Image (tube, rainbow, N blue to C red; front, side, top):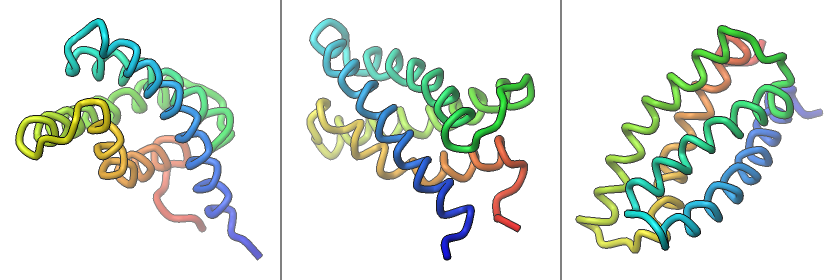
Length: 128
């Protein structure tokens, strides 16, 4: 029998896949018009909005409220600082193409954002 937390994590992966697909396509489109840092920043902001909707409605099935509405972007802004630093490092020091670097950043930062998002919507890290 599966635990409730397993279903949440599976829904998080599905919601993340949808969010990543939408924002990555947007990023690639913006990349032809803007410098990569600006394109990444714009798509990150779009991803925060889409992610909040997906996480509140689909992943954790909690109604949107002021507390989660304030905490969610704050957690993502902290994650953005980490992400943009990794992104810059990957492109400028490790020479990963700017078209693919966001995917590497995502792999590195997903566990952190999952844990913070879970706390925001459930108020706890571990299932009871």
